[in-house]
Amino acid sequence: MVVFNWPSFWEAFPVLAPGLTMTIGLTVLVMPIAVAVGLALAVTRLYTPKPVARVATFWVEVWRGTPLLLQLYWLYYVMPSEFGLQISAFTTVTIGLVCNVSAFLSENFRAGISSIRHGQRNAALALGMSETRAFFRVVLPQAWSRTLPETVNIWVELFKETSLVATLGVADLTYRAMALREENYRTLEVLTALALYYLFLAYPQAKFSDWIYRRTRTKE
Amino acid sequence: MINDDRVHAQGRPQLISIENVTRRYPNGVTALRGVSMVAYEGEVVCIIGPSGSGKSTLLRCVNGLEPIDSGRILFDGRTVGVKGRPAREIRRHIGMVFQSFELFPHMSVLANVGEGPRTVLRLPKQEVEQRAQTLLERVGLADKATSLPAQLSGGQQQRVAIARALAMEPRAMLFDEATSALDPENIGEVLSVMQALAQDGMTMLVVTHEMEFARTVADWVVVMDDGLILEEGRPERVFEDPRLARTGEFLSRVRKTS
Image 1 (cartoon, rainbow over the protein chains, first blue to last red):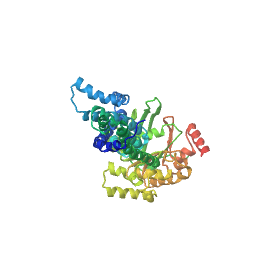
Image 2: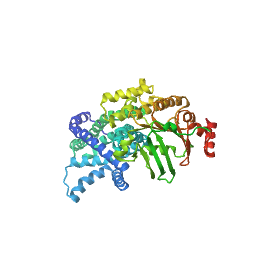
Image 3: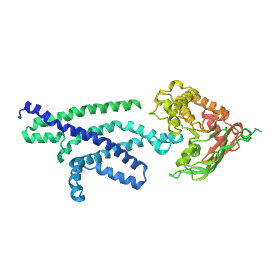
Image 4: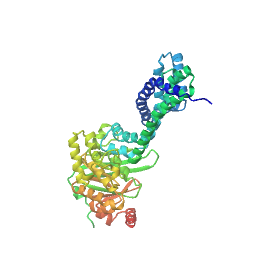
Protein backbone atom coordinates (compact mmCIF):
# COMPACT_ATOMS: atom_id res chain seq x y z
CA MET A 1 0.00 0.00 0.00
CA VAL A 2 1.39 3.35 -1.07
CA VAL A 3 1.06 6.11 1.49
CA PHE A 4 -0.41 9.30 0.10
CA ASN A 5 2.15 12.01 0.69
CA TRP A 6 0.12 15.17 1.27
CA PRO A 7 3.01 17.66 1.12
CA SER A 8 4.09 16.34 -2.30
CA PHE A 9 0.49 16.58 -3.42
CA TRP A 10 0.14 20.23 -2.39
CA GLU A 11 3.55 21.10 -3.78
CA ALA A 12 2.57 19.75 -7.18
CA PHE A 13 -0.06 22.43 -7.80
CA PRO A 14 2.22 25.48 -8.12
CA VAL A 15 4.71 23.47 -10.17
CA LEU A 16 2.03 22.47 -12.68
CA ALA A 17 0.43 25.95 -12.75
CA PRO A 18 2.60 27.43 -15.54
CA GLY A 19 1.31 24.66 -17.85
CA LEU A 20 -2.20 26.07 -17.49
CA THR A 21 -1.41 28.86 -19.92
CA MET A 22 -0.45 26.35 -22.60
CA THR A 23 -3.41 24.00 -22.01
CA ILE A 24 -5.98 26.78 -21.97
CA GLY A 25 -4.15 28.81 -24.61
CA LEU A 26 -4.09 25.89 -27.05
CA THR A 27 -7.80 25.24 -26.55
CA VAL A 28 -8.67 28.90 -27.03
CA LEU A 29 -6.45 29.17 -30.09
CA VAL A 30 -7.49 25.93 -31.78
CA MET A 31 -11.26 26.08 -31.28
CA PRO A 32 -12.14 29.21 -33.31
CA ILE A 33 -9.88 28.14 -36.17
CA ALA A 34 -11.36 24.64 -36.09
CA VAL A 35 -14.90 26.08 -36.13
CA ALA A 36 -14.09 28.13 -39.23
CA VAL A 37 -12.37 25.20 -40.98
CA GLY A 38 -15.12 22.77 -39.92
CA LEU A 39 -17.77 25.09 -41.32
CA ALA A 40 -15.86 25.47 -44.57
CA LEU A 41 -15.57 21.68 -44.85
CA ALA A 42 -19.28 21.21 -44.13
CA VAL A 43 -20.23 23.79 -46.77
CA THR A 44 -17.84 22.20 -49.27
CA ARG A 45 -19.37 18.79 -48.69
CA LEU A 46 -22.93 20.10 -49.03
CA TYR A 47 -22.80 22.73 -51.74
CA THR A 48 -19.92 22.04 -54.11
CA PRO A 49 -19.80 19.70 -57.15
CA LYS A 50 -19.43 16.03 -56.31
CA PRO A 51 -15.70 15.57 -57.00
CA VAL A 52 -14.79 18.49 -54.73
CA ALA A 53 -17.25 17.37 -52.06
CA ARG A 54 -15.78 13.86 -52.17
CA VAL A 55 -12.27 15.17 -51.56
CA ALA A 56 -13.53 17.07 -48.52
CA THR A 57 -15.33 13.98 -47.25
CA PHE A 58 -12.19 11.87 -47.68
CA TRP A 59 -10.15 14.46 -45.79
CA VAL A 60 -12.66 14.47 -42.93
CA GLU A 61 -12.77 10.68 -42.74
CA VAL A 62 -8.98 10.46 -42.54
CA TRP A 63 -8.86 12.79 -39.55
CA ARG A 64 -11.88 11.23 -37.88
CA GLY A 65 -10.72 7.70 -38.47
CA THR A 66 -7.19 7.82 -37.05
CA PRO A 67 -6.02 8.43 -33.46
CA LEU A 68 -5.01 11.94 -32.51
CA LEU A 69 -1.73 10.74 -31.02
CA LEU A 70 -0.79 9.12 -34.31
CA GLN A 71 -1.75 12.29 -36.18
CA LEU A 72 0.48 14.43 -33.98
CA TYR A 73 3.40 12.03 -34.33
CA TRP A 74 2.91 11.81 -38.06
CA LEU A 75 2.93 15.56 -38.47
CA TYR A 76 5.88 15.99 -36.14
CA TYR A 77 8.16 13.27 -37.50
CA VAL A 78 7.03 12.60 -41.07
CA MET A 79 6.52 16.14 -42.30
CA PRO A 80 10.12 17.28 -41.65
CA SER A 81 11.83 14.08 -42.80
CA GLU A 82 9.73 13.42 -45.91
CA PHE A 83 8.73 16.91 -46.99
CA GLY A 84 11.52 18.94 -45.47
CA LEU A 85 9.10 21.11 -43.54
CA GLN A 86 10.71 22.34 -40.33
CA ILE A 87 7.99 23.48 -37.98
CA SER A 88 8.05 23.93 -34.23
CA ALA A 89 6.32 21.47 -31.91
CA PHE A 90 3.80 24.14 -30.96
CA THR A 91 2.85 24.86 -34.56
CA THR A 92 2.66 21.13 -35.27
CA VAL A 93 0.24 20.40 -32.46
CA THR A 94 -1.84 23.46 -33.32
CA ILE A 95 -2.20 22.23 -36.92
CA GLY A 96 -2.86 18.67 -35.77
CA LEU A 97 -5.54 19.68 -33.29
CA VAL A 98 -7.21 22.02 -35.80
CA CYS A 99 -7.34 19.25 -38.42
CA ASN A 100 -8.65 16.69 -35.96
CA VAL A 101 -11.25 18.88 -34.25
CA SER A 102 -12.44 20.53 -37.47
CA ALA A 103 -13.17 17.09 -38.94
CA PHE A 104 -15.51 16.28 -36.07
CA LEU A 105 -17.03 19.76 -36.16
CA SER A 106 -17.66 19.54 -39.90
CA GLU A 107 -19.67 16.37 -39.40
CA ASN A 108 -21.66 18.13 -36.70
CA PHE A 109 -22.28 21.24 -38.84
CA ARG A 110 -23.15 19.20 -41.90
CA ALA A 111 -25.85 17.34 -39.99
CA GLY A 112 -27.13 20.61 -38.54
CA ILE A 113 -27.31 22.38 -41.88
CA SER A 114 -29.04 19.41 -43.55
CA SER A 115 -31.61 19.33 -40.75
CA ILE A 116 -32.92 22.79 -41.67
CA ARG A 117 -36.00 22.40 -43.87
CA HIS A 118 -35.58 23.28 -47.51
CA GLY A 119 -38.61 25.54 -47.20
CA GLN A 120 -36.61 27.95 -45.04
CA ARG A 121 -34.19 28.54 -47.88
CA ASN A 122 -37.07 28.92 -50.32
CA ALA A 123 -38.76 31.46 -48.05
CA ALA A 124 -35.55 33.50 -47.96
CA LEU A 125 -35.06 33.25 -51.73
CA ALA A 126 -38.70 34.24 -52.30
CA LEU A 127 -37.96 37.52 -50.51
CA GLY A 128 -35.28 38.20 -53.10
CA MET A 129 -32.22 37.11 -51.11
CA SER A 130 -29.23 35.53 -52.84
CA GLU A 131 -28.32 31.92 -52.02
CA THR A 132 -25.34 33.14 -49.98
CA ARG A 133 -27.40 35.61 -48.01
CA ALA A 134 -30.14 33.05 -47.42
CA PHE A 135 -27.50 30.71 -46.04
CA PHE A 136 -25.96 33.23 -43.66
CA ARG A 137 -29.19 34.94 -42.55
CA VAL A 138 -31.57 32.01 -42.35
CA VAL A 139 -29.98 28.55 -42.58
CA LEU A 140 -26.73 28.97 -40.67
CA PRO A 141 -28.09 30.71 -37.55
CA GLN A 142 -30.62 27.90 -37.08
CA ALA A 143 -28.07 25.18 -37.79
CA TRP A 144 -25.64 26.88 -35.41
CA SER A 145 -27.99 26.90 -32.42
CA ARG A 146 -29.11 23.36 -33.20
CA THR A 147 -25.50 22.10 -33.21
CA LEU A 148 -24.26 24.26 -30.34
CA PRO A 149 -24.56 21.56 -27.63
CA GLU A 150 -22.41 19.14 -29.64
CA THR A 151 -19.99 21.95 -30.52
CA VAL A 152 -19.52 22.67 -26.83
CA ASN A 153 -18.99 18.94 -26.18
CA ILE A 154 -16.28 18.90 -28.81
CA TRP A 155 -14.74 21.93 -27.13
CA VAL A 156 -14.57 20.09 -23.78
CA GLU A 157 -13.10 17.04 -25.54
CA LEU A 158 -10.49 19.27 -27.14
CA PHE A 159 -9.60 20.77 -23.78
CA LYS A 160 -8.81 17.32 -22.41
CA GLU A 161 -7.13 16.00 -25.54
CA THR A 162 -4.63 18.83 -25.58
CA SER A 163 -2.83 16.67 -22.97
CA LEU A 164 -1.43 14.59 -25.86
CA VAL A 165 0.76 17.51 -26.94
CA ALA A 166 2.96 16.72 -23.92
CA THR A 167 4.33 13.77 -25.86
CA LEU A 168 5.92 16.21 -28.32
CA GLY A 169 7.40 18.27 -25.52
CA VAL A 170 4.91 21.12 -25.59
CA ALA A 171 4.89 22.38 -22.03
CA ASP A 172 1.24 22.07 -21.04
CA LEU A 173 -0.19 20.86 -17.72
CA THR A 174 0.48 17.20 -18.51
CA TYR A 175 4.05 17.88 -19.63
CA ARG A 176 4.78 19.69 -16.35
CA ALA A 177 3.28 16.81 -14.41
CA MET A 178 5.39 14.23 -16.22
CA ALA A 179 8.50 16.30 -15.66
CA LEU A 180 7.77 16.71 -11.96
CA ARG A 181 7.06 13.01 -11.57
CA GLU A 182 10.41 12.15 -13.07
CA GLU A 183 12.00 14.49 -10.56
CA ASN A 184 10.34 13.35 -7.34
CA TYR A 185 8.91 9.90 -8.27
CA ARG A 186 5.64 10.88 -6.55
CA THR A 187 3.48 9.44 -9.32
CA LEU A 188 0.30 9.10 -7.28
CA GLU A 189 0.39 12.62 -5.84
CA VAL A 190 1.46 14.36 -9.03
CA LEU A 191 -1.02 12.60 -11.28
CA THR A 192 -3.83 13.14 -8.77
CA ALA A 193 -3.05 16.84 -8.74
CA LEU A 194 -3.04 16.81 -12.55
CA ALA A 195 -6.38 15.03 -12.65
CA LEU A 196 -7.86 17.62 -10.31
CA TYR A 197 -6.65 20.44 -12.53
CA TYR A 198 -8.41 18.94 -15.54
CA LEU A 199 -11.50 18.05 -13.57
CA PHE A 200 -11.96 21.47 -12.02
CA LEU A 201 -11.46 23.16 -15.35
CA ALA A 202 -13.57 20.75 -17.39
CA TYR A 203 -16.44 20.51 -14.93
CA PRO A 204 -17.75 24.06 -15.40
CA GLN A 205 -17.39 23.62 -19.15
CA ALA A 206 -19.44 20.43 -19.02
CA LYS A 207 -22.07 22.21 -16.91
CA PHE A 208 -22.07 25.05 -19.42
CA SER A 209 -22.60 22.49 -22.16
CA ASP A 210 -25.58 21.01 -20.28
CA TRP A 211 -27.03 24.47 -19.83
CA ILE A 212 -26.69 25.24 -23.54
CA TYR A 213 -28.30 21.91 -24.36
CA ARG A 214 -31.32 22.64 -22.15
CA ARG A 215 -31.62 26.15 -23.52
CA THR A 216 -31.64 25.06 -27.17
CA ARG A 217 -34.13 22.31 -26.42
CA THR A 218 -36.66 24.63 -24.81
CA LYS A 219 -36.38 27.13 -27.64
CA GLU A 220 -37.53 24.71 -30.30
CA MET B 1 -75.90 30.47 -70.09
CA ILE B 2 -73.53 31.74 -67.41
CA ASN B 3 -71.27 34.65 -68.24
CA ASP B 4 -67.77 33.31 -68.87
CA ASP B 5 -66.05 36.41 -70.19
CA ARG B 6 -62.88 37.76 -68.73
CA VAL B 7 -64.36 41.28 -68.94
CA HIS B 8 -62.96 42.24 -65.54
CA ALA B 9 -59.49 42.04 -67.06
CA GLN B 10 -60.21 44.05 -70.17
CA GLY B 11 -57.65 46.71 -70.85
CA ARG B 12 -55.37 45.51 -68.06
CA PRO B 13 -51.84 44.34 -68.81
CA GLN B 14 -50.80 40.74 -68.37
CA LEU B 15 -48.66 40.61 -65.24
CA ILE B 16 -47.92 36.90 -65.20
CA SER B 17 -47.89 34.90 -68.38
CA ILE B 18 -47.14 31.19 -68.47
CA GLU B 19 -46.47 29.77 -71.92
CA ASN B 20 -46.47 26.05 -72.58
CA VAL B 21 -44.43 25.19 -69.51
CA THR B 22 -43.23 21.66 -68.81
CA ARG B 23 -41.44 20.39 -65.75
CA ARG B 24 -40.03 16.94 -65.17
CA TYR B 25 -38.42 16.24 -61.81
CA PRO B 26 -34.98 14.61 -61.69
CA ASN B 27 -36.68 11.48 -60.29
CA GLY B 28 -38.59 11.12 -63.56
CA VAL B 29 -41.99 12.35 -62.41
CA THR B 30 -43.54 14.79 -64.86
CA ALA B 31 -45.26 17.53 -62.89
CA LEU B 32 -46.23 19.88 -65.73
CA ARG B 33 -47.04 18.72 -69.26
CA GLY B 34 -47.43 21.99 -71.12
CA VAL B 35 -49.30 24.59 -69.11
CA SER B 36 -50.33 28.00 -70.44
CA MET B 37 -52.23 30.59 -68.48
CA VAL B 38 -52.30 34.30 -67.74
CA ALA B 39 -52.92 36.50 -64.75
CA TYR B 40 -53.86 40.11 -65.48
CA GLU B 41 -52.88 42.98 -63.24
CA GLY B 42 -55.17 43.12 -60.21
CA GLU B 43 -56.74 39.77 -60.92
CA VAL B 44 -57.26 36.98 -58.37
CA VAL B 45 -56.69 33.63 -60.06
CA CYS B 46 -57.41 30.50 -58.06
CA ILE B 47 -55.79 27.25 -59.17
CA ILE B 48 -57.69 24.19 -58.01
CA GLY B 49 -57.38 20.49 -58.66
CA PRO B 50 -56.57 17.20 -56.98
CA SER B 51 -53.36 16.63 -55.02
CA GLY B 52 -50.38 15.95 -57.24
CA SER B 53 -51.89 17.75 -60.20
CA GLY B 54 -48.93 20.15 -60.48
CA LYS B 55 -50.52 23.25 -58.93
CA SER B 56 -47.80 23.89 -56.38
CA THR B 57 -45.03 23.11 -58.85
CA LEU B 58 -46.52 25.65 -61.26
CA LEU B 59 -46.61 28.26 -58.51
CA ARG B 60 -42.96 27.68 -57.60
CA CYS B 61 -42.02 28.02 -61.27
CA VAL B 62 -43.66 31.46 -61.39
CA ASN B 63 -41.04 32.99 -59.08
CA GLY B 64 -38.22 30.73 -60.24
CA LEU B 65 -37.91 28.58 -57.12
CA GLU B 66 -38.40 25.63 -59.44
CA PRO B 67 -36.73 25.42 -62.86
CA ILE B 68 -38.77 24.67 -65.98
CA ASP B 69 -37.72 22.32 -68.76
CA SER B 70 -39.42 24.05 -71.67
CA GLY B 71 -41.76 26.92 -72.39
CA ARG B 72 -41.36 30.24 -70.62
CA ILE B 73 -42.78 32.37 -67.89
CA LEU B 74 -42.97 36.14 -68.11
CA PHE B 75 -43.47 38.50 -65.22
CA ASP B 76 -44.33 41.99 -66.37
CA GLY B 77 -42.75 41.15 -69.73
CA ARG B 78 -39.49 39.84 -68.24
CA THR B 79 -38.49 36.20 -68.42
CA VAL B 80 -38.42 34.53 -65.03
CA GLY B 81 -35.11 32.82 -64.26
CA VAL B 82 -33.89 30.53 -61.53
CA LYS B 83 -30.44 31.89 -60.70
CA GLY B 84 -28.53 35.09 -60.34
CA ARG B 85 -29.38 38.74 -60.08
CA PRO B 86 -32.15 38.84 -62.72
CA ALA B 87 -34.00 36.03 -60.90
CA ARG B 88 -33.70 37.87 -57.57
CA GLU B 89 -34.78 41.12 -59.19
CA ILE B 90 -38.07 39.50 -60.22
CA ARG B 91 -38.58 37.60 -56.97
CA ARG B 92 -38.51 40.72 -54.87
CA HIS B 93 -41.63 41.90 -56.71
CA ILE B 94 -43.48 38.62 -56.10
CA GLY B 95 -44.54 37.73 -52.57
CA MET B 96 -44.96 34.09 -51.68
CA VAL B 97 -46.87 32.40 -48.87
CA PHE B 98 -46.14 28.75 -48.12
CA GLN B 99 -48.28 25.93 -46.81
CA SER B 100 -46.00 25.46 -43.80
CA PHE B 101 -45.56 29.23 -43.14
CA GLU B 102 -41.75 29.04 -43.15
CA LEU B 103 -41.33 31.92 -40.75
CA PHE B 104 -37.75 32.28 -39.58
CA PRO B 105 -37.90 30.70 -36.11
CA HIS B 106 -34.81 32.47 -34.79
CA MET B 107 -36.22 35.94 -35.39
CA SER B 108 -39.01 37.84 -33.65
CA VAL B 109 -42.27 38.39 -35.51
CA LEU B 110 -41.27 41.99 -36.20
CA ALA B 111 -37.84 40.93 -37.49
CA ASN B 112 -39.46 38.33 -39.74
CA VAL B 113 -41.62 40.97 -41.38
CA GLY B 114 -38.70 43.39 -41.60
CA GLU B 115 -36.22 40.86 -43.00
CA GLY B 116 -36.89 41.56 -46.68
CA PRO B 117 -36.81 45.36 -46.42
CA ARG B 118 -33.72 45.19 -44.21
CA THR B 119 -31.51 42.73 -46.10
CA VAL B 120 -32.82 42.95 -49.65
CA LEU B 121 -34.05 46.55 -49.96
CA ARG B 122 -31.48 47.78 -47.41
CA LEU B 123 -33.84 50.35 -45.96
CA PRO B 124 -32.79 52.23 -42.81
CA LYS B 125 -33.63 50.50 -39.52
CA GLN B 126 -36.31 52.94 -38.48
CA GLU B 127 -38.16 52.68 -41.77
CA VAL B 128 -37.94 48.89 -41.65
CA GLU B 129 -39.50 48.73 -38.21
CA GLN B 130 -42.18 51.23 -39.09
CA ARG B 131 -43.14 49.31 -42.20
CA ALA B 132 -43.15 46.00 -40.31
CA GLN B 133 -45.26 47.43 -37.50
CA THR B 134 -47.79 48.88 -39.96
CA LEU B 135 -48.10 45.54 -41.72
CA LEU B 136 -48.56 43.66 -38.44
CA GLU B 137 -51.41 46.04 -37.65
CA ARG B 138 -52.89 45.34 -41.05
CA VAL B 139 -52.98 41.58 -40.35
CA GLY B 140 -54.20 42.19 -36.80
CA LEU B 141 -51.06 41.12 -34.95
CA ALA B 142 -49.52 44.39 -33.78
CA ASP B 143 -49.38 43.07 -30.21
CA LYS B 144 -47.26 40.05 -31.24
CA ALA B 145 -44.31 42.05 -32.61
CA THR B 146 -41.82 40.83 -30.00
CA SER B 147 -43.04 37.21 -29.90
CA LEU B 148 -41.19 34.36 -31.53
CA PRO B 149 -43.06 32.51 -34.28
CA ALA B 150 -43.25 29.35 -32.16
CA GLN B 151 -45.37 31.23 -29.63
CA LEU B 152 -48.12 31.91 -32.17
CA SER B 153 -50.96 29.75 -33.44
CA GLY B 154 -50.79 28.44 -37.00
CA GLY B 155 -53.26 31.04 -38.22
CA GLN B 156 -51.28 33.84 -36.61
CA GLN B 157 -48.04 32.51 -38.09
CA GLN B 158 -49.55 32.46 -41.55
CA ARG B 159 -50.79 36.04 -41.14
CA VAL B 160 -47.24 37.05 -40.17
CA ALA B 161 -45.98 35.21 -43.27
CA ILE B 162 -48.39 37.24 -45.40
CA ALA B 163 -47.16 40.45 -43.75
CA ARG B 164 -43.56 39.37 -44.38
CA ALA B 165 -44.30 38.93 -48.08
CA LEU B 166 -46.17 42.24 -48.27
CA ALA B 167 -43.25 44.07 -46.66
CA MET B 168 -41.44 43.88 -50.00
CA GLU B 169 -44.38 45.80 -51.52
CA PRO B 170 -44.80 43.11 -54.16
CA ARG B 171 -46.76 43.54 -57.38
CA ALA B 172 -48.16 40.03 -57.12
CA MET B 173 -48.68 37.43 -54.40
CA LEU B 174 -48.46 33.65 -54.68
CA PHE B 175 -50.34 31.53 -52.15
CA ASP B 176 -49.32 27.88 -52.03
CA GLU B 177 -52.11 26.09 -50.12
CA ALA B 178 -51.84 28.75 -47.45
CA THR B 179 -54.54 27.23 -45.24
CA SER B 180 -53.91 23.50 -45.75
CA ALA B 181 -51.72 23.09 -42.67
CA LEU B 182 -54.08 24.98 -40.37
CA ASP B 183 -56.55 23.79 -37.77
CA PRO B 184 -60.11 24.41 -38.99
CA GLU B 185 -60.70 27.20 -36.45
CA ASN B 186 -57.67 29.12 -37.79
CA ILE B 187 -58.53 28.99 -41.49
CA GLY B 188 -61.05 31.83 -41.46
CA GLU B 189 -58.67 34.49 -40.14
CA VAL B 190 -56.14 33.75 -42.89
CA LEU B 191 -58.75 33.67 -45.64
CA SER B 192 -60.14 37.02 -44.54
CA VAL B 193 -56.69 38.61 -44.71
CA MET B 194 -56.36 37.18 -48.22
CA GLN B 195 -59.80 38.46 -49.14
CA ALA B 196 -58.94 41.95 -47.91
CA LEU B 197 -55.80 41.83 -50.00
CA ALA B 198 -57.83 40.85 -53.06
CA GLN B 199 -60.19 43.76 -52.46
CA ASP B 200 -57.21 46.12 -52.35
CA GLY B 201 -56.48 45.09 -55.91
CA MET B 202 -53.49 42.81 -55.38
CA THR B 203 -52.69 40.44 -58.21
CA MET B 204 -52.94 36.99 -56.65
CA LEU B 205 -52.23 33.46 -57.78
CA VAL B 206 -53.87 31.21 -55.21
CA VAL B 207 -53.41 27.45 -55.11
CA THR B 208 -56.15 26.27 -52.78
CA HIS B 209 -58.48 23.54 -51.66
CA GLU B 210 -60.87 26.13 -50.22
CA MET B 211 -63.62 25.95 -52.83
CA GLU B 212 -65.74 28.55 -51.09
CA PHE B 213 -62.86 31.01 -51.27
CA ALA B 214 -62.27 30.23 -54.94
CA ARG B 215 -65.97 30.67 -55.68
CA THR B 216 -66.44 33.96 -53.87
CA VAL B 217 -63.08 35.74 -54.15
CA ALA B 218 -61.52 34.56 -57.42
CA ASP B 219 -61.96 36.49 -60.63
CA TRP B 220 -60.80 33.50 -62.59
CA VAL B 221 -60.50 29.81 -61.78
CA VAL B 222 -58.04 27.38 -63.32
CA VAL B 223 -58.63 23.65 -62.89
CA MET B 224 -55.55 21.43 -63.11
CA ASP B 225 -55.16 17.69 -63.23
CA ASP B 226 -52.16 15.50 -63.95
CA GLY B 227 -49.89 18.35 -65.02
CA LEU B 228 -52.39 19.93 -67.41
CA ILE B 229 -55.02 22.62 -67.28
CA LEU B 230 -58.40 20.92 -67.61
CA GLU B 231 -60.35 24.10 -68.00
CA GLU B 232 -60.54 27.68 -66.83
CA GLY B 233 -63.22 30.27 -66.51
CA ARG B 234 -65.26 32.53 -64.26
CA PRO B 235 -65.86 30.82 -60.90
CA GLU B 236 -69.65 30.80 -61.35
CA ARG B 237 -69.30 29.03 -64.65
CA VAL B 238 -66.63 26.52 -63.56
CA PHE B 239 -68.49 25.56 -60.40
CA GLU B 240 -72.04 25.53 -61.84
CA ASP B 241 -71.39 24.28 -65.32
CA PRO B 242 -68.05 22.50 -65.67
CA ARG B 243 -67.23 21.73 -69.29
CA LEU B 244 -65.44 18.49 -68.63
CA ALA B 245 -66.65 15.43 -66.81
CA ARG B 246 -63.35 15.24 -64.91
CA THR B 247 -63.80 18.74 -63.53
CA GLY B 248 -67.28 17.78 -62.40
CA GLU B 249 -66.00 14.63 -60.73
CA PHE B 250 -63.30 16.56 -58.89
CA LEU B 251 -65.74 19.22 -57.74
CA SER B 252 -68.28 16.74 -56.46
CA ARG B 253 -65.53 14.82 -54.63
CA VAL B 254 -64.43 18.03 -52.93
CA ARG B 255 -68.03 18.96 -52.07
CA LYS B 256 -68.57 15.62 -50.37
CA THR B 257 -65.54 15.99 -48.12
CA SER B 258 -66.02 19.63 -47.14
